[in-house]
Image (cartoon, rainbow, N blue to C red):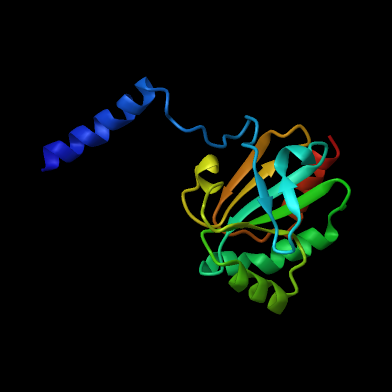
Length: 167
């Protein structure tokens, strides 16, 4: 059984590659995979339509303790950033929108929360877990990828984001 598992593990990716079926995922330095999702208020968001702005794309879920932990710092960052040059999109991944609405109301979260409860966008970004955050520059290129929670309102992240905004 171990030999069969090893054979599948080694050969399957080669088979997929030969068929041209390896999915493309988000990579730093490459264009961000485009997506269209609806937020919890019913507004439609398409990433490619946000070119010219720096976009903070965060994948999260209410059942994820580190995601809940970082959300207040994301909101504080969102409040400080220039709305005409910066967008923050919190993509609810594999979770119930009703739970996210309650969570957002309790915390006073005002950033757009986009519904990806069926996890259609996560695979395009090659998610390894939650939370994961991607910083997309004004040209639509992924410039940063962060795995795990962060204190987003720290001076370090504010400077980094303003650097992309001022380019």
